[in-house]
Image (cartoon, rainbow, N blue to C red; front, side, top):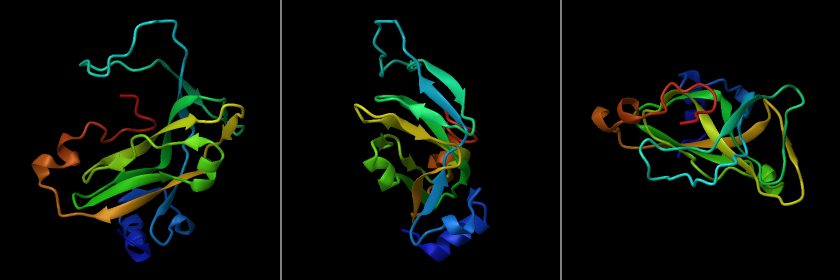
Length: 178
C-alpha cells in the first residue's frame, strides 16, 4: 500500500489529477463528487434485465446536472456519479475506492464496483450510490468529499493483459453508463 510521500509523487506525476495537497492523507487520497449524475428512472416494463445477455441491458437512467443545491436522494434511490478526479494508473499501480465512513453511517452506500486495475487511464471513477435508509432523504452536492482511494504497488502487468490495452472504461468522462 502506498503512503503519503508516494501519494504526493502520484499527484505530482499526474497519475491522479484534480487533487489538492490537503486531500492527500497518510495512506489514501480524498475524492470529490462531480456535477453530473445518472439517476435510475422508473420503468413500467415487467421484463427483467438479463445480466448474462450480450450486449447487456441496463436499467433506465435519467441524466441530472446538479446545481449548487445538489441532489436529494430519496430512500432506495440508486444513481451513478463520478469523481472530479481523473485517473491515469501505470501498469504497476492498482487502486481501491472506499466510501467515507461518516457518509456510510448516514445511510449512503457505495460498495459495488470499487476496484481499479493497473493501466486504467484518462477516466473519472464512476460511483454506484444508493440511499439505504428507509425513512430519510440524503442530499449530495458537487465537490463534496465522497470517499478515498487507496493505491497499491503490484508487479508490472504485461501490456497485452493491462487494462490500458483491454479495458473498456479508459478515457470515460463523467459517470460511465456502460
